[in-house]
Amino acid sequence: MSDAPRSAELFARAQRVIPGGVNSPVRAFRAVGGTPRFMVSGQGPYLTDADGHTYVDLVASWGPMIHGHAHPQIVAAVQQAATSGLSFGTPTIGEIELAEELIGKLATAAQAHGTTSPLEEVRLVNSGTEATMSAVRLAKGVTGRRKIVKFAGCYHGHVDALLASAGSGVITFATPDTPGVTSAQAAETIVVPYNDLAAVEAAFAADGPDIAAVITEAAAGNMGAIAPKPGFNAGLREITERHGALLIMDEVMTGFRVSAAGWYGLDPVAADLFTFGKVMSGGLPAAAFGGRREIMASLSPAGPVYQAGTLSGNPVAVAAGLASLRLATPEVYVTLDATARRIGALATQALAEAGVAHRVQYAGNLFSVFFTDQDVTDFAGAQAAETFRYGPFFHAMLNAGVYLPPSAFEAWFVGAAHDDRALEIIAAALPAAARAAAAA
Ligand code: PMP
Image (cartoon, rainbow, N blue to C red):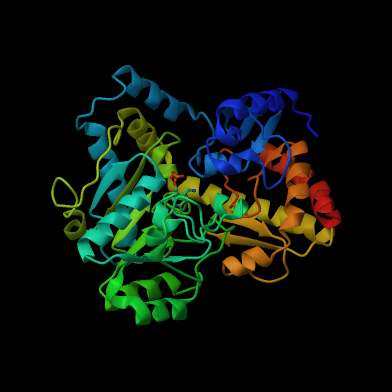
């Protein structure tokens, strides 16, 4: 079933040398069926595949591309950095600048909220997974405790201890517990429902002295978009503090996307540790974790908790991240928010006209469509939706030139480059896609 013969050929070739033909599972289209499209270029809001089809991109490389693809200033920054050398394995000026930029963005938001920023020092790493893995290790090292509380449906990268009831590709492939994670590792993870402070209290009542940290997505984006209920993140702060555990706010997806200071800019909860990735990388491999100085001081070489990386703070990745963050003016966030709302409203209109029960849910400018007539506040709710409608919906959009996430459990991402023409293509595609969802 493919009108993408070149992608089909490439996928067959890829499957001979790469497990499942992809380097990250959700790319494989398993949840929606059909042939994954091999992209050859991106420009502004558009992607072009190997067959020459162009799509309005609502994946944005799973978050990083807030300025659209191949933004000239980011490309120029990368070219300039590359000319000066690709990697030195020594400290560089750019790393200081990127750390200052991240810390400065949260400091500005903290000041606007009349508080002080909890982000005083950051360590650069190469992926969101590394950031959460390192933050968890640091939390265990600092507290001398061994257990972590996480929420069902939240995804924090493929860290062993954090794969239990994870979202994103882990739900898409229905592998709640992956082979290769030992029972000892799994036993150190306590999974509770998202948005349920009573369940967190109960976990602490049972295991309090052993719990090193609670890790949460600042707003959930890996089981579809589910915002924390008002006071939920603040409640986590209060409970963890009371029990001497740390709070790790995972802003890999929300960071520098939902506002200039990420979710912290919308709801300034002073977590002990934050993790960042995606937008701060400009689209190259870079991520970070950070927090208050007294906690970060436990990290090697300042302190005893070991963490390292050959390519950490890579000068080309740092240049891309810096350029991306410096382009992220207040107007960019106004545009991202407005564009997300416009696309969400178009989806609502088309699905309502086709008589499909649905919820378009937002977490800042992250959003997604759930095929259900109930508000979705947790993983159980996300799983109860009629996800079988998503495949036909997705393919109708794809055929009409709109690239959505190839799974019902992923957020949709917009960029500031999505202009009226891109929105017209989406508007034109939605009615038939809504009818396909209705007919599923
Ligand atoms: N945390 C969150 C909230 C994420 O959304 C992701 C990736 N989608 C990660 C961590 C892992 O990041 P990476 O894929 O860069 O390892």
